[in-house]
Length: 144
Figure 1 (cartoon, one colour):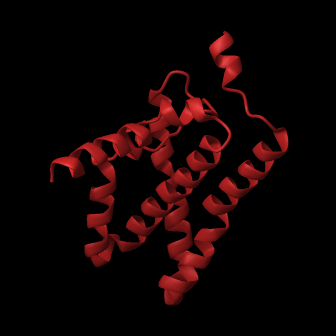
Figure 2: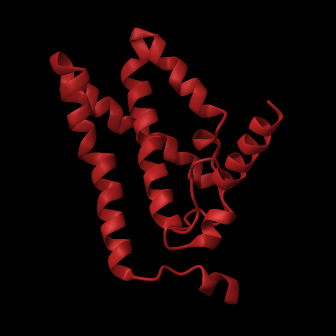
């Protein structure tokens, strides 16, 4: 239990601002994306982008289901580093571009949330898949 306690956030104010930013990016900013990239059908684009949040269903596979100190990017299957290039490829097909924008922006939002968490929980960063990926890329670049 001591390990869990050491992973607590240092300030509740940061958590509330972080939560507000996170959900603002998830629910409010997609309106901007819809208006900018899909102005003729922005309502449909917005609702489609909201629907892409269904990728969060992969959180149900984790134990515990919700851990505010866990970075979802790279952890959950639909948030994995294997899924991201697939979502990027969806940008190439006109029929799936809105979905791709929604999925990629969702992952961007979750990454912002992870980085915010890491700024006041070094242990969270060191145990994250993002940190592991960073180290893998550094080793790979050393050999190239």
